[in-house]
Length: 499
Ligand SMILES: Cc1cc2nc3c(=O)[nH]c(=O)nc-3n(C[C@H](O)[C@H](O)[C@H](O)COP(=O)(O)OP(=O)(O)OC[C@H]3O[C@@H](n4cnc5c(N)ncnc54)[C@H](O)[C@@H]3O)c2cc1C
Picture 1 (tube, rainbow, N blue to C red):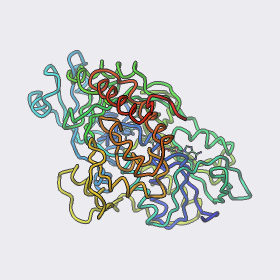
Picture 2 (picture 1 turned 30 degrees about the vertical axis):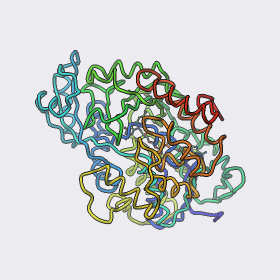
Picture 3 (picture 1 turned 120 degrees about the vertical axis):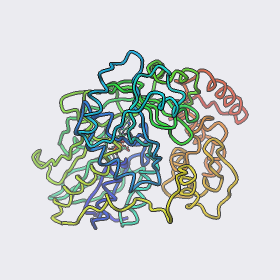
């Protein structure tokens, strides 16, 4: 491995991998290191909503405009992982009826297409909505798979010459003359001219390693995954952003979100948050109360805040040059959204190129991340399958994960990648274990495809359990009772926390 690079990027979420791709396409010598797996931070713990910008139009117009522009760009460059569902904003009984009069002009002002439609038309398209909804507005929200997006960035960055590594934490960094020396994973020393801090919620800690600071305001949000597609389009509540007001149809599931509270990265979702989300969402989708919740999870928003916290904090981003703090060559990027990751990467890469004293045009708004060989049809799921199958030609089609339609061959193919070091890595690349049985039926196949033993199996099931525990009611309780019986056969207590 090379021990000296021009640019070292810390963090393998959408932002860091987007920067690696951008800079590698401009000819810079780049290395990216990710402490855990790609998309294991906020990037893999959000709704997967590609914002039209409408959610922020009234209260955060700068962010709304950024989302409006970037949403369109991503629909072009990342179509392999986007389902262009469209979105609806609906107001529930008791909501402020005047809000729509502020919402529509604010959307238009931000360049967002928004059209009020008849309530009857909205109910015809989405029969599960509360028949008492009072207004409906159509927008161009979509759903996006953040895991495939990030892995697409990784593949593209590598194809352009970048070194991109997961399970490679930066333990320390120090100045050495005009350069930086970073200790990766406790054994590799890497020298770099410029360091990019794209460590999301951990960006404050990373900057502090070099004596710099960032005014972060980390905000926890919890989401609940329901089995099946409860809605065809993204449904938002037509009111200022609040708890439990988004339903995102996502592949085989629907994601309900979210909450907003102070919370450190890694804090788990709780039953109280799940109850709160469901109580709120009933106002727009009454059937949510009896729908099958299969899992809850939480992420932390790496917000800058601008002096405010939680829902009041801006969703815009900032590229920070730490030269004024005395750390010339350190660039941090923080805040923003998954939807705006490409723009964040472009601005951060511009700052890096300036530090390197080089000029090259950004190409990421035009060139597709993972181009299709031919034009995709409208059948998103078939296309996604084709994308996956395309990487697994000639491998066994025998089913391994029935919930997510993952074949044995696909598991074996991905398990053979040097990036896949544990069962969580395998799950993020195949979706095996993400479905309604929460790995009850596929975990053993996953372990055998990787050639790992009971210890790793228990660890993986223990991680899944953390997300299942807050939703142990209704159908999922029956599923877990069945899983407990199955695991008993293997002599595994899947509810044990294993570190
Ligand atoms: C509840 C919630 C819902 C959201 N919903 C949406 C949505 O629907 N749509 C949308 O557009 N946005 C949404 N967001 C925002 C979006 O998820 C984030 O803005 C985005 O994912 C941030 O990506 P990132 O790459 O900057 O950070 P991250 O994905 O957190 O990546 C940072 C990475 O840095 C790594 N790292 C940290 N320290 C080190 C170190 N020392 N060495 C190496 N690596 C390190 C971490 O392991 C992590 O993987 C949501 C966020 C939350 C929390």
